[in-house]
Each structure stands twice: as C-alpha cells, then as structure tokens.
Length: 190
Image (cartoon, rainbow, N blue to C red):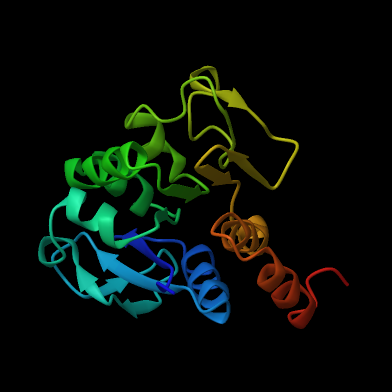
C-alpha cells in the first residue's frame, strides 16, 4: 500500500502552532508530511521567533505537476507574513491550482486561505479563515464552525482550531479511525 504523503508549504512568519500541530498529528497517523520552504532557505523563523528546519526547498522538489503525482495534498499554515508570502508567491499559486486540477486535498488555516482565494479555489464553496482575511463574498463564508470541508478544500480559522484542522485533514485523507484514536490519545474531547 502506498504511503499517504502531503506537502506543507511555508515561509518565514508561519504560525508555529498551526504548522507544528498539523505536522505532529499527521505524523502520529503515519502520514508523511514534507515541510517545504518557499524562501530558498531551510531554516525558517516563525511568527513568534521559533526556528524550524524545513525538510526541503520548493526549488528542489520538482514541478507542480510532478508533485501532484507524488503527494496526496498540500497544506498552507497561517501566520504573518507567511500567509501573504504564500499568497504572493506564483509558485505556491501554481502548486495549489495544479493540486486542485489533480483532485488532491488543499488545506489552509488562519490567514492562509487567502492563497486559495487568489488561486480561484474558494468561488462558490463554503470556507472559513481568520476574521477579515478573505473576501467573504468570494465564498460561502462560515464563522460558526472550526473547520470547513468543501469537496477537496479544507479551511480552518486559526490557532484555536489547529487540532480540529489536523484531525479533519487526517479524516479526509482516509484515516477516520486514526483521527478518532489520536483525538482520544491527546484528550481532545475531554
């Protein structure tokens, strides 16, 4: 059986909780997560000055279409200026659009859904984000839930919803039982 793999695209100013919680919980579910820097540097500084080493650089992993064949999804954590960096990076937009065309999962949390919005992926679907980060008229905006699944697009609101976001992602990747086991093991529903 092929191992499930996802690609997390990040730059400096990423929200540490959103990125690391997601990586941690997905890896607990035996999902390979490759953290990929879009800055040209492997060492990245988070929004709260925590340094993290990326697994790879975007310029070294191949074209977007090649990656869409290798990976089951792409994840965009929030934080500033990470979210605007991702939104303004044409390589990121190309990856997101290519993954969408290949019917792969696209997941974004906090302010990062602005990259999905720029890529044209939120039109007419339910989505959420950190308040005021996306044009609420570009989608069917939800502020009454932690995470939204709309087809292959998963969006979530912020740090306080990071665990829900990660568990939702695990479920949507086909591991609902593992998501429940992990939720129980981390005392999520206490």
